[in-house]
Image 1 (cartoon, one colour):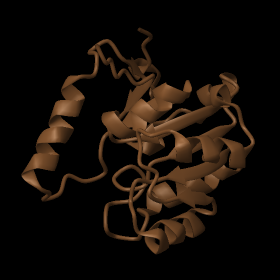
Image 2 (cartoon, helix red, strand yellow):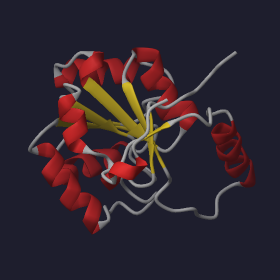
Image 3 (cartoon, helix red, strand yellow):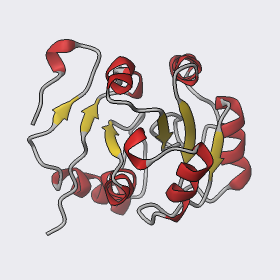
Image 4 (tube, one colour):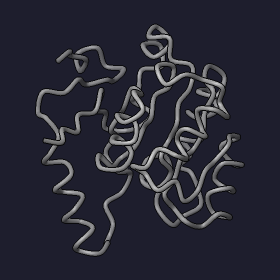
Length: 175
């Protein structure tokens, strides 16, 4: 039986404890784009995330790995964040993620993948042996009812015994 179990769950990407990542010898962060670090179809980062990404780049190598098929959109997002970006990643397939690891020149145990979708972002990370962080979507928007249903179903498959990984020390708990 397929068990999708993120290493950590946080409410917002900026809640990730960067000091704990450094202690775990993490050297790279790979982000999903839409609804993880950028609201879908906007082309703009929220100010708090953009400032946070600037701080992250001082400590880690970063990349964007998006299933979004629009090359120009994804590439512009990468330029704004100051990192390499991959469109049409076809997560949970591993090909684009493997390329990101090569381009970052990092081993799987040195990288965290961060995303809002268990069956794409978290699964590709698990398949490659990466640390995984599931975040809540930035926005809940009017989307196809079938997609909404799939997203709800994805979250049902996640074990309830999860590590929480946030700056607030009271929220950190081990499995």
